[in-house]
Image 1: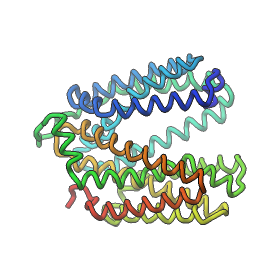
Image 2: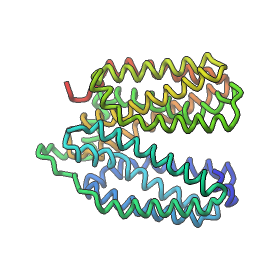
Image 3: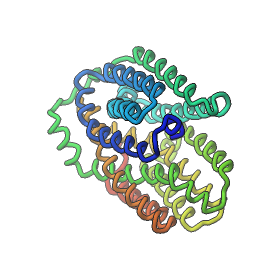
Image 4: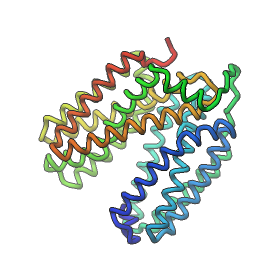
Length: 357
């Protein structure tokens, strides 16, 4: 936001850019899944990585609304192209072994990257936004070259299943009540975490009288907790998938209720951090289950359909969170508790254990 404002872009223009980008990303989600299944996951990842790199060059040199809009439109193509392909590459590379563990490592490395970038910015860059933009170009350029080192996994499985048309794939996904219920539950749990830990938590901290410096330290703590995903497989290994999903939902409900009824710092911060832990452990599990459900070679297509469905549910939940927070902030947290409790019921209803039964 500060980088764009320094180049003369207003907050309203930023929101316009983000809205256009999100709408385009949702529209491109499924077409990219179909393309990835046809040309292969490595080619898709390499193309999107280089497009990502080019978009960062534009970002670095941008000095107008039009420049930042072009960059964000390119990112819509990139993120919709990456969606589903990353988890597909990981799942097939694991060949059915330890995939949840690797998903946890993948998510934790993302958090480690975020911490590293934040540290470099705070210690060395500070107010030099152009330098920050240039280093972003360098990091994405390295990533683009590393993409050539990927091994193509598309179509290497021994158990080949029918390929089917896109229409048939769409019907198979959205016509399967168990999958639809599971995806709604995932959306409820994930978006409660996203909305509260990214947006509403700041309003709650102000409600408790916290200063900006304290909020910064809490953010660091929450980011560090985001690296606990590597232990997700140990939790499910000890409790089983079904009980683990129940635990994550119960922790989320407890966190939301705690934040809703509290005006004090310690319970509020504890609620946010527990919610972060719950989601961190939950994401590798749900990614693994989504991949277990898939019995077709069109894996990227199915995962893209899943992602689009989850995003559509998220749009609705975000609107409700926003409306309730404008009325009375604790109502928004209470809504989070309700839909997380609904997730628990949905996971129980659909089985929620993928195909390991």
